[in-house]
Length: 98
Image 1 (cartoon, rainbow, N blue to C red):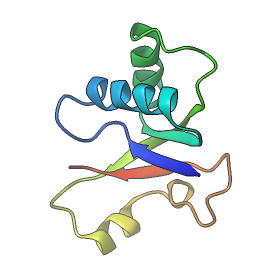
Image 2 (cartoon, helix red, strand yellow):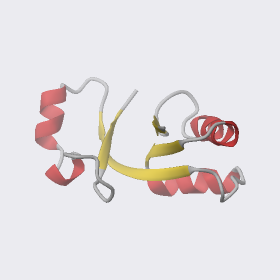
Image 3 (cartoon, rainbow, N blue to C red):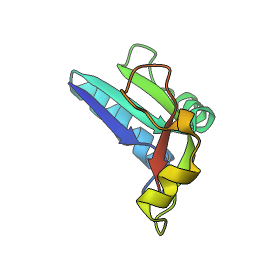
């Protein structure tokens, strides 16, 4: 099973979100995909001394859909390369703000 987590959203993000992902990866099988700013996610994983053997991957999301933004407007203004058409690796993602 794969579980995608918005690492940048929520209270005390990204630190607390990533700490939770590390705990989950240590206890459960399956892949945890952290979505958000790749550099910030890597920095937190390093600071939290996350073991290299955890089944955690990162999908960079360089663009953000703000909470008050209308979804149709967001799709029109975000670059087409940021919208995943098929979820294949190597595609950029965007994330929803909370």
